[in-house]
Amino acid sequence: MRLSARVEYGVRAMAVLAFHFQDGPLPLREIASREGISFQFLEQIFPDLRRAGLIESARGARGGYMLALQPSQINVGDIVRAVEGPITPVNCLAEDGSGEVCRHRTEGCLTRHVWEKLRDRINEVLDEVSLADLIDWKPAHLIN
Image (cartoon, rainbow, N blue to C red; front, side, top):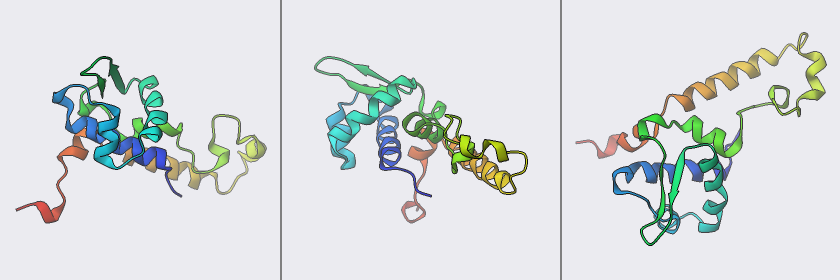
């Protein structure tokens, strides 16, 4: 299972905003440049983050984007769900109706509990890591 580039770039861009949280709004072009991400690609991701209430925008010469909450109040799971929607490793767990094919098997499905467990663990891991954790983390080779 792979997360999409939208998720990866969304998390990276949000980490940049968290790192510069005290500095005020950052232009999207600057975020894209710092992370080596296409500006046009970020333009497609940021409306989802704004709709989810994770970022705010400021207009004007010193405008750009900033986190809507403290870095400690936004976790990676929030970003993933804002950009991709609910985490569903298999179709039968989808809440959007795409899992209708196996709805009739829910009670007798021998594998459903494994997929539910996987979904729950993925959500747990993503929800326990905040943006503050990301920017405070230091790789072992940089310590000392």
